[in-house]
Length: 394
Length: 214
Image 1 (cartoon, helix red, strand yellow):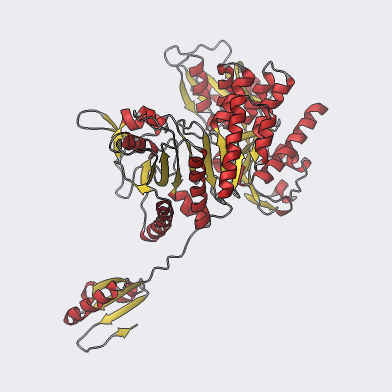
Image 2 (cartoon, helix red, strand yellow):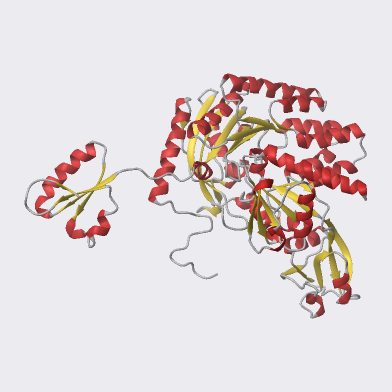
């Protein structure tokens, strides 16, 4: 391996320059405000965690974890998501606080590049976790809050797809009666390989009705009518119950006025293996990946010895900002160029302007080589130069 | 027809068959499709924009979302393992992936060497067979490798078997049947569900009627 050049960074690591930083912060602050106004409290967790705790509990593939060793030789990971660390906090430092808990975060997470560039290995997530609440109200709240964030930010043609892990599993094991065969089909669905799924289903020794039921599963995507279609596939009692829960959830979302952008999609499988119930993803025009994703995870907390149902979602800031498109940086910046004789006057003026909330640079004229070039960076330049009194605006 | 869907098409072997299929499915494609060297072709009447890519790159464009849909060979899908939906078998460009070698060829027993344009497929396949091999990646004319001693066997696609035969190689094992697939970006699949479902259904009907006609 050759030594990196001075300008090189590890794969997938990116710098954020002033214009982008400002835009990102503005958007992020609006999202955070919305979450705070729903009563979610922000917390921060360490960048490094133990592989044996958070690393194991996280749903991110092991080969995507950045690992290092501490002084005692224990394996550490750079946190790959925020849900597992928050589960750890809730079951330890916050053990005494009664459920339900509403927590939020805004933090970078780290996932190593697996094959090539084009995707960041460190990116910011802003999200919430509603822990200790197993009801449909909790699900509606999470979905409504996510929709509200998308709506208020005016993400173009945003769509939220809602699926359910349980329904598909129930239907498969009911029809196939045997978990190994169901597992084969689930694998195809997970790999998004519908061609493989379809030809595998056709090869199974099933009645033509059951074959149709399995094939129809792939079409369960669309508006509220999809729940009817799903019901016509004749799922077992638990499957019907799931559909009733989703119908109920839809009604709740209508009360929140957040049902317009919801589609149901039983083919939605999250790559996060800890989800146990509903899963959902948010999309926006022009972005080829989910901008936000979340779901119910009722088993994760028990890994940290404080069993509880929970639901949450995370927004990927990089995609979210990209979906909003380029915004012109309209922050005004001013500058006072001064010479030594008038420094005190310049300082006084600067203090006043800054207290008015203006963004002001003070620059000694003798420190600038090319005044014209320098002045161009500001919306206004005030010259306090020479010995005469008074202000000159350029 | 408010949104224009971007479709990644594979240049070369599959291209003509894919264009035929789309025309038969009722998509009016401009005549420049047949001779142009342009890499981006708009077909506004069809509500489609085409990008012409190397076959091996089609799933990459679709995974990154710069194309909503694409047509890719199953060989490429197996090799690339991209996060895209494989929604329909178009049943065109049929061939298969196979292991080939010299007749009566003797493998080096310590480290059998396999040459292939599909290093991922090759190494998966031999691992599943319980064999440890060393894979050498080549970009074309794979049949050369065993002839001049670069590798013991090759993994490549076979359609008629003529190339193997003319170079004195024999097929040893079949790995997988290959046809072209319609693939879809996961986010586009939901954002443009109506348009994409329509396209898939039109192609599905066409493919199925062709099957029955045979």
